[in-house]
Amino acid sequence: MAPQRPVVTRRVVPLLIAAALAAGCGHQSLYRWGHYEDLLHAMWVEPGSADPVTQVARLREDVERAAAEGRGVPPGVWAHLGYLHWLQGNTDAAQEALVRERELFPESAVFVDGMLRRLGAS
Amino acid sequence: MTAGGCRVPAAFAVALLAGGCAVQEYDYAPFRAHQPRSILVLPPLSEATDVNAPYVFLSTVTRPVAEAGYYVFPVAVVDALMKENGLPTPGEMHQVSLGKLREVFGADAVLYVTVEEWGQRYRVLDSSTIVRAHASLVDTASGASIWDGLVHGVESSSAGQSDLIGMLIAALIEQVVDSLSDRTYGVSRSAIQQAVSDQRRGLLYGTRHPGYDGDLRGR
Image (cartoon, rainbow over all chains, first blue to last red; front, side):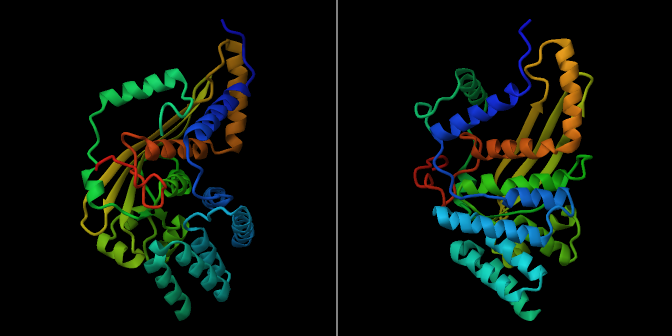
């Protein structure tokens, strides 16, 4: 029988392999992901843990860091911020964020224009 | 991705080769005929008992698809807008016509997902976390199905334990830890990443990926 290995080993080894693979094969990731996925997970799975105020604070921090590091903001993040501002009744900030999404990702134009029309109507 | 450029463990490489030989070459012609730039991911249908399954999946799907070079619509905003417009469940969202989705979102393609199995299984000595889902990508203009894939991940928490007492202690610790954290989140993340980036069966690179021009699959 092999000696018992510490619990931590089986968690660290896959991480090391993943890191080696990422470093050896991958191109650099296209975007700086920050808190976006964790916030989505939290708002759906642990209701109350990621209210709009918290989400806005984290995502603002993310987009500032991405800018400082010269990295891309992932698709959807500015639109998500726009929606959060809309929920908070901050129409100007919502509009500004949605326009940023459309500038970075022209693929979002139909969707963003629809959101902007709804903002204007509300 | 070249085998020479990265240090893939030998056993892993052999498994990849063996897996590859057994599978017929995937037909990427429909994908190439309708190469999408943007992908709308709808909240998944679910056959699993874990009520969180569709939304854990949804929280982990943006990154791998976006990193493959596609514009991915903001999943939570899409979900919220659909709910506000009288579509409270994924089942109802999946009934919306492709024409309507194209009109409202301007999406080139829609990713329809069905979660088949999801959650943690406890046994006496260990536990395992399983995620399994089927994903299908449909072109909104033609209605053609352009890609489909199986997302499958299993993480056993007793690997590396070889003596009984150690396993029992580990199993107890795992159960305490599991009650505090959602393991499916991490397993879902790596399983989707694997399905999307699979060189023989995954998504082709999208136009925002630097490898797009050099991706000869289906050309």
